Amino acid sequence: MITAACIVTLKREPTFRLVKGDTLPLWSAFGVAGTEGVQLVAFGHLAEEIDFGSLGIGDAISVIGTLSLESWRAKDGTERTGLKLIISKADPIAPPEPKTRQPRRRAQAKAAPATTSEEDFDDELPDWGAH
Image (tube, rainbow, N blue to C red):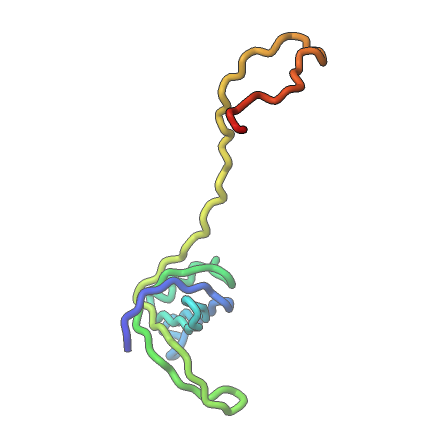
């Protein structure tokens, strides 16, 4: 087993239930950390705390825990292996607030003449020193 810290994006809805004769809270979810899928599990008071009630598919959660490689037999009878993280600490990661665009301060323009006519515009471009 390895102690790991990672940020996981949930790929399935988390579940919360009582196990061991309805005495032990269990929270579990499946997500992706980097490119690896990982089963997340928390027990007891931590499971109750993690059951934030608002976490769902696509949400991110920062977790620390014990990582292990688990083996099991799938419903179709094939042997499977995968990563399982028993969580010891977890915090939801809120998406960043949308940035509000501040208007740019523009330089004060000189007051334009009250009236303009076609004669006020110069058809020639200024010489910027490029030849």
